[in-house]
Amino acid sequence: MSTVSALWRHPVKGVGAEPLEAVELAAGQCLPGDRAFAIAQEGAETYGEWAHCRNFIRGAKAGTLMAVTAKSDGAQTTFAHPDLPDLTVALPDEGNRLIDWIRPLYPENRPAPERLVTATEQGMTDAPFPSISILSDTSRTILSQHAGRELDRRRFRGNIWLEGLAPWEEFEWIGRRLRVGSALLEVRERNTRCKATHSDPKTGREDTDVLRLLEDGWGHRDFGVYAVCIEPGRVALGDGATLT
Image (spheres, rainbow, N blue to C red):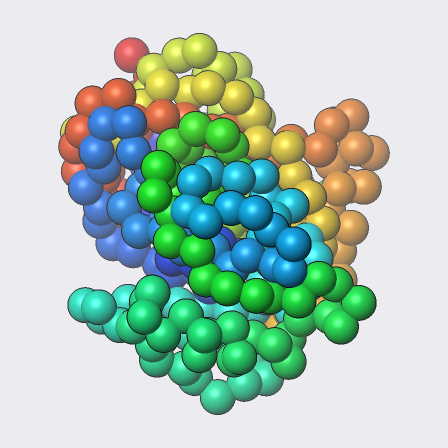
């Protein structure tokens, strides 16, 4: 049996990773608070309904964003980056303050961050359904060995990390159900990666071509799987995960 080694959410899509100790999952919904907001770029047409990631600012377009962390405290969230002073805001009301804060991190040759969007149907995950991403520490260890350096979990912006699996075992779960803590999830598809994984979350600087490593080593660009919660329940660090 594998166990939960880490839990993460990302309050604003592409901007800020936040560690958790426990979470209550609801059927048919994303992990609570995950990608609850997103920053639409110039030209984006979405106003809250789910939209493709091309509409938003994200780490694939600006690796510097990968070094942003988040910490929630009631209605307020504090964002931090090694090159900026911390910012505490209440979202969505103070979305413009967050946009102004990240402007120095965003390339001038990209469509500019324009407005904060509040997700209305589901979190603004990359998958077009209320996905919860599940990732394997063993697969990360194998990939890190191939890279010649440890690859921080935050590169992959996942939700539930499991330890105790065989390498790449998670890819065999498509179409199966997984009991994690007291919640039941159905695994839907593999997670194909983007250039956001190339940047070190400690610095925001590109240092590893993760996509090339995946292609050279295993012939694909996939890391982790997307699942949907079908029975609500609590998931906490140290909880077991078992296929049903």
